[in-house]
Length: 180
Image (cartoon, rainbow, N blue to C red; front, side, top):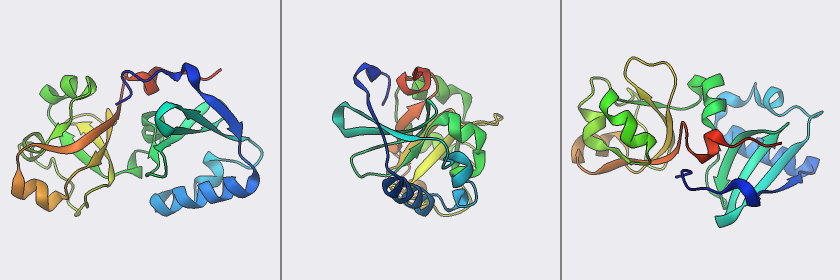
């Protein structure tokens, strides 16, 4: 998704405190596990900026670190760097090592790749349109963040075609992007 993203046109603005609280509330609503951590992630004494790029892409930035991003009014996506700090933030789907290179190149996560791996699907039921982490079997950290196109039950039943949309991977434009 971000492989061809050009960050040079990023326009940044500091958010007023009322909008900051609204953003924090929306993030906690989407990620309840962050309720006790949101003030640590986004302390009042540090300015929260929104960076706006082409295609209605928004980045939420604290001290030159992008924490979340989203398109228009869609879901908030944590960056992989944030996910590596809080690995339990997202439900986890597992793939085998052979899938890593194509996924990091931008390929979608296929249903057959999720179902062929023992315990590749989460034990809990995950609905469609949910932000999830993709981890290679035997590894600790996620290498991709995706958006489910089908629920876990549908993935098991259909077992053909794309199951998770690839949003952000290690070494893509967002991973490599540094704010100065």
